Structure formats: structure tokens, C-alpha cells
Length: 124
Image (cartoon, rainbow, N blue to C red):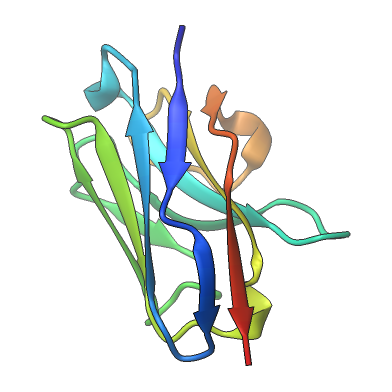
């Protein structure tokens, strides 16, 4: 059974940093692009940042630009999301998702597998 497990969430003061990790049990992890999404209470799930299956291409969103970076280690089946200069509006549950595609996509319904999410709370 395929599993994606996020970790690294928590409470952080505005301006601080967090590093989220996504560990995958996918045997063919290298065939999947990975996207990070987030969902705040009462809002739709939104795309944050994604990385292609080789790690050579990243696709960001306006919310992530200049503050968040993504990386992957295919040998360890992990993807990391480094979030800097966090703002209260970044507060949400963060999910990683896997898609069998060359590059990540911004539409949540495109993804094949999802993790359970990790809560990020940024206080001012």
C-alpha cells in the first residue's frame, strides 16, 4: 500500500522557518513528481510548490515565491519543503501528493496519492 507521510509541522513565530518532510513508500518513487499543497480552515486546497520526478524542475506559486524551496532525495524517497519568512497567512494543514507525471501540476485532482497532512501554525 502506498503511503505518503508528512512531518515537521508545528508552531512558529512570524518570520521564522520550518522544514517539512514527505516520506514515501512508493517503490517507483522516482517516477512521481511531488507537489505540496495546503488548506486553511474554510478555504480550498491550494498548490504551494512542486518538484519534478528527477528534481530538475520546480514549479512554484505566488505564495511560495522567494520564501519556500523544495528538494528531493530519490535514494531516500523523501521530499523536503523549506519554508522561510513565514507569515500568519501561511497557517494551514500542509499535504504532500504524488503524481505519475514528468512535472508537478497545480490541480489537486490530478494527483494519485496524498499524505494525511501536517499542521503549520504561524503566530504574530
